[in-house]
Image 1: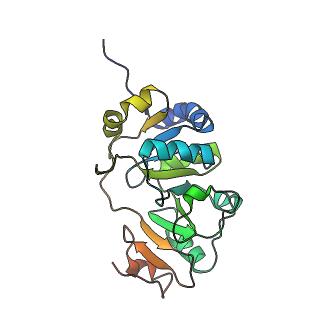
Image 2 (image 1 turned 60 degrees about the horizontal axis):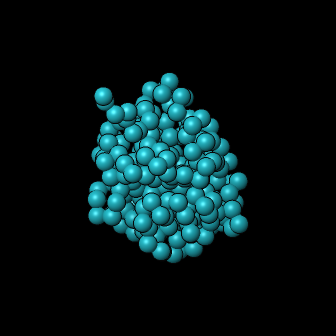
Image 3 (image 1 turned 45 degrees about the vertical axis):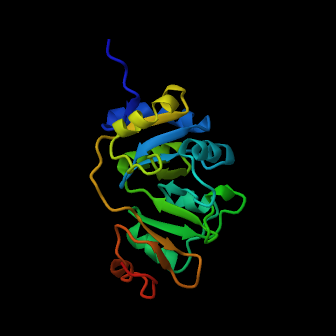
Length: 223
């Protein structure tokens, strides 16, 4: 007898619609979710202390390495008191949704401190993955995000890789995997620190500094 798949189909419009209610319940239960993004498969959960702790435990994340949060609307940014001002707003207007992560000020009393990076801000990306964006809009809130892999193992590009590495967590119900098919290899998102007077590229990625300078001329960093 063939064992049932460990991942939930999340490809066609009908599959996505069918998966959303149980996935939202999983997030409300403070468990970890694995999902496709515009770059690699990610791990994440609700933006609260208990959910972040579950993600830290599953990922074995060391202190000082925060997670980013994914949004699918400007309302999600403003409701969490994250501030897109000046040059950050110009970068977002040009490159969101897309592979640009902005480290933003704000989020006090709304975002767990464990998500705050060494720059003092919260890393935010507006996802351009249509299926994930549909889930976020149905859920109504951001979710956290980090690459779905164990230390030293490349980020997963298909759900089967997650199933092989995390079968125990899936079996216990601690991890729910959404199967969005095999992802196309791509560069990671570009990360820009927006905490200072000038924006600074702190991780080169899919969007070059030259392209970013079309919106903000004095950005720091080359790639």
